[in-house]
Length: 88
Image (cartoon, rainbow, N blue to C red):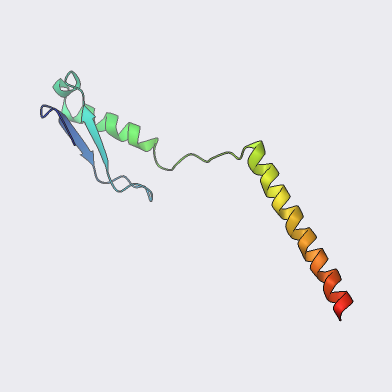
């Protein structure tokens, strides 16, 4: 829900990004007095920074969990190999 009907809205539909279809900017009242070309150039400059989402870094907990899963998987595979060798 949008409150305040006296807002100027600038919508960018050509984002040239595979992640975003369009970007909507709500212009401040003091910024609404600026020329359209200034607003559009500022919006393009800001949207150029948002071309792709930032990469997430794995924490130490995530790395430890991944290592534990690999270790347990390798152990289960080795145990299964030994069991299959005994049975056969």
